[in-house]
Image 1 (cartoon, each protein chain N blue to C red):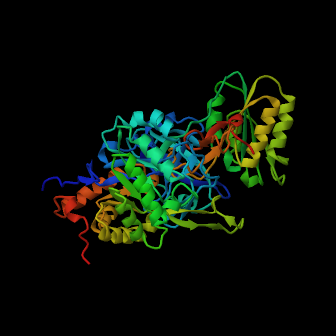
Image 2 (cartoon, chains in turn blue, red):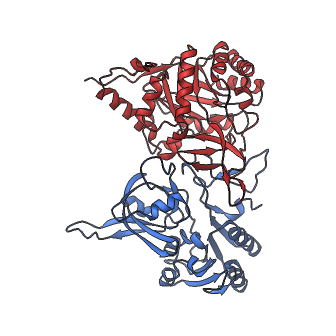
Image 3 (cartoon, each protein chain N blue to C red):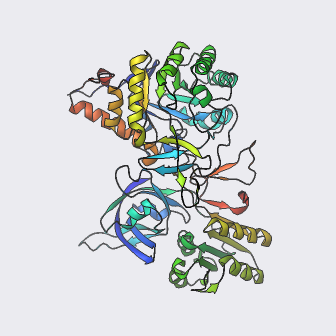
Length: 271
Length: 305
């Protein structure tokens, strides 16, 4: 669907990272974890294209106006990286954006008896909180959160408030274990047993290692990918990734926007 | 005032209004059905087809630039057989003309594909792509040499009775010469412009921003070039012209009509907003009503110079 959204708040949660709350129609509450939105952050032709963002959370709140009913919203967690996100960062309460949502496939929560393991790197945490909220209702959930420095480690408190065991790693050791989040993950996985499922989002090198660890341990792994995209609905073919069986003669390209952004790690070529 | 008449005819295809969707920016129509009424636009031009499926170029394939975007998709497509099986069933349900854009590596391939498409009753017309800048074959060879263009159009003409639109490349010294060659080969209409070859550099990595190094520039940034070429071609050849290039509003579209276009195609604007083509048709109608123009056809080529 397409709708106009009003900014409820737009705050910095860590240097360079922000959380924006946007009003939404009721149907947005049905968005599945891992789905995304395309935001037009300003009228006109600059920026020309919409920007894709994961759904970080959805819910309802009571507006401060007398007699008004509860209002539905969704949240987006974003890092200020370029022109589009800089404009988004400058939006104030009561500004409007134009939204296409919800887009993409979302995570498959899988069998609730499995232990659910979330792995997020930097802004890759964005789709995992909404997923965690759903998963904790039925399953045991553990989260591994990584970043370069402590500023890049997001929402640890939110995860802990859900009652999730949360492990943190930073490259420079300013928060949690010094090192890569994938090292902490691997160490932890090797000790565990029982049926498990991994859900990961973050920089590509991290996803590649997570996919490899899962493959070696026989654990199903879903990854949420990020890509430059123009349309968000499978038309421009600008955001494809190579599928596992891809060859030049028999192309196997998958649209991140339409067939993803969530893929089973073993469906993709990690070359 | 009565509702203005927006209908036009392109190569014998009756359009309820002059707004078509540009190939490669609207998928196969179905992707956009949720966001607009497909029966409120003039025609759907589908993503460029080849005989066999095509992989396309490596990533990254797109980049936003000031007022536009570069793309080097590389004609990735499902191929004619998958088109028939998976895309035509939906298109059949829409009461809007479907125009199939297609390309080949050789004159023979163009002809073979045209022959195949000729047997699909759901297809109102074909648009020959001789202008994709992002693959060595698959178009641009034929799009920059008038003799080669003539051969392709004539070969297609020989095997199909469907109306033929030829999509021209702006990456030539003299687009009028190309247009004339297509007219001599008995094309029914011309659409222009395809994207303009460009590139972008990422200073930080010191690499080209696109894996293909160069890409095709589209969007509002190219509109002045497109208008100039439409004006030149419409004056020089008798065939109806479909104007393409950076159209994002009804006034943009009407500017192309004044310059000599009979219809227009909306491309990059579909990415900006999936309902853009319907909105543009509505804005055209509003302008005509407000300016006392009863029929959009009265405006074609009436630029005061």
